[in-house]
Structure formats: C-alpha cells, structure tokens
Length: 183
Image (cartoon, rainbow, N blue to C red; front, side, top):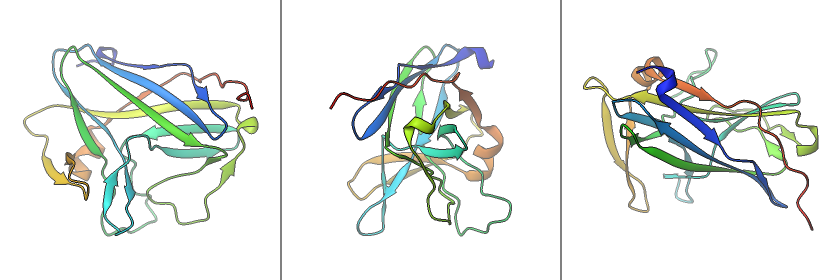
C-alpha cells in the first residue's frame, strides 16, 4: 500500500484558556487494513497504566513543536526495562479513524523516556506546530497481544522491534495556531 493510500487530515487547531486541541482523521483509502500506533498511556494512582485517549508526546525544538502519537524509539544512550509500545487500533480498508489531542498550556515536552525536568514553551513562542501519527500495515506476520487496563478496557499492542521497523509516519504540514481564547 502506498503512502498516498493513507491520508492525515487535521482540523483547525482550537485554543481554550488552558489547552490546544488538535482534532484529526486518518483515512485508509487502501485495499488492506492498517493499525494506528496511537494509544498512549498515563500511569494511574496504583501505578498501573491506563489508556489516555487525548495524550500525545511533545517535542520542543526552539520555536518548533512536534506533537506525536506513534512509537518512539528508545534513545541509543538509554537502557530501559521495557520500551513503551502504544496500543494499536485497526482501521479497515475504506474506513476513517477520528482522534483528538489535548495539549495543556504552556506546552510541555513529553516523552516516554524523558529523564530531565520537563521543558515548557509558551504558546506565543511557537512558530511551527506539526502532528505526526504512526501506523503499521496489517499482515499475518504482525504479532499483536491483548491487554486490559485497570478500568477494564481491553486493547491490543504490538511488539517493539517489529513495530519500530514496520511503522510508517504521517506528518501534517505546519498547523496555523489560533489567536488567544477570549476571557
């Protein structure tokens, strides 16, 4: 399936007094199913992971911000007990998945492998904002595993190494930022 068979459409970015909201759609125009690699987690009060449907990783690079919902590779200089592998959700041929991301303001760097104090960036300093969404094509070789979070929601994950090699990334053009929300 060609990249052109999968399309990312991002609606205009919304701004509230406390957050930016990015709503987007992934259209699978291909003949085969795919799996979005976009189910990120928060840690609950008991230490167990739970799905956080509005969460995204945030990379701050000066005035450029990349918002990512995908598998991020473990940094080469870091050893981890288990890499964070997002939950996956199936998008059949001809179907569309609709998602949203809520980014609290000021924007704060977020990564599953962050060890330093989180860097922040006021929205007024942002010159470019992009969204990246990861997916893998469905295939008989794709190994998926069922899991259940503390609240009872059942979800699936894939294997880190296999997903890292197979993941494709959709990236938006720079997204226009809205003016300050009315008070």
